[in-house]
Length: 637
Image 1 (cartoon, one colour):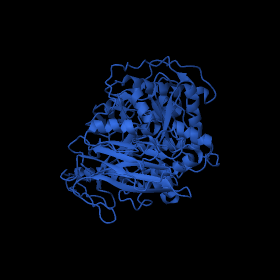
Image 2: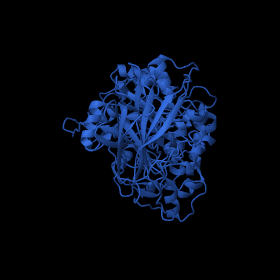
Image 3: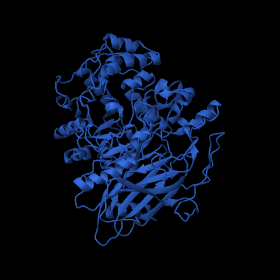
Image 4: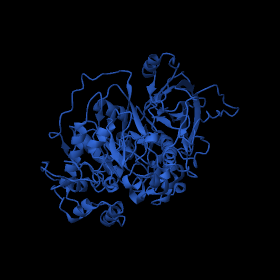
């Protein structure tokens, strides 16, 4: 049994789980486990829309089975997290709340690292549960005492720069397997095809030299998953993780990895060199392209699209930049410049596409929270009342004046992001396939829906929505696709459509933009931002700059009105600078009108003044997966 809440109760382990024999090599330990997994519900009678629906979900979430979440003292169990995603009310940090829009799908992505250790901690009587250090951890109730325990027994085991290792209180591979199995059981128990889909997943949390290279790992079929979630103690670098996924694929286990927090990667997420220090090879870029299909654009630790310091010409680059990330673990943002950011990576990938025929950064776009409270997609600015990391940010005072240890200061937090996928039905296979095919988008919270098609020749008619979608698929490619030049057709034409979130408290839309990147002769990314559709009667000035939409936010009451902006925007755009010989990548950014930030809601509810230097409003947004153009006959998969 899983503990209802780690700060309150630890349940007794009633039965020993039976799993296969222990193997000694890391790759051997990821052998398939299928016979013990329940059979998923049949999907033949699930509603199917060939034009696809937008399904919103959470792809980055930690529960009490993540050690750092357990230390925070407030994390939900995997089952509770899935129930919250479906609309159940919970109490975290003394606050009762729920999300007012249940999710369509979700994944628990607990850290593979220390999963066995948490299994022993949460299940009294289980293997390893009587270890003195585990018993000590289980008895600690004070957050600071738990942090000191973590420094003493976990951090000390990994000092010195060598290969990461399990701490001495690890009960062995069987505990890791059993912890993974309990998460899978909660994942399957909460799978309700057509209503709520769950994906088997975990997080691999590699961080060499303090640079964030974390990946969430997803599997298509819960009946075919590895018997153990493998962390950095087993696979020290991402290349080893991809090789593991390749070996699993040979066994019929389909998986993929999604990197996150490039903004904290110390320039390593899009490094010109492999972990061994040598330049990227064809084998490296091919393996990365095959198993990394998307990248997380935003989460509670900031927006990784761009930073205002390095994209000064982009008027919307000053959005949840999370500057204080640079104050910890040697992550000085200025030291790495553009190399930490997704837009740079998308552009840089074109250089490898041209040179090698494969793009290692051929990434679709997803979003997540990375909440360590277990509160799936609690992304509304007005609902961020319990924070995201338990006792580290669970009160207004902590969010204003404290920090999430080792990461960033409280005011730089945000509620996180959410992923939308365009899929024909809400099943595990359909959601996974949409993510694999990169037909995904992310929003900073609101349920903005956005479509994006590219083609050569005449643009689809935008007057009839269904006809526009039909023509988009029939004559071109959707977000995530690659355009190939058609002789005599000129520049590509892009069709965009977006509609605001459905709640009355969701802001109207300001504009839709297309961001284009290419690489120059030196192989460095060059980009431009183009306004495609906008609200009202505004007109661009002589320099092509569109006037601001306005601002209706009342900072004294944390309210706004939708008297500006538009509910729906759509349009077409032809690239005015198209060069048929040059690789290019295009993605859509949808900008919402100004609305109150979470920090403003905190201040108003607590009767406190707004903080100097802390944003009081935000312009929420959505980002689509890109559409690529390559002049080569051969393109990335």
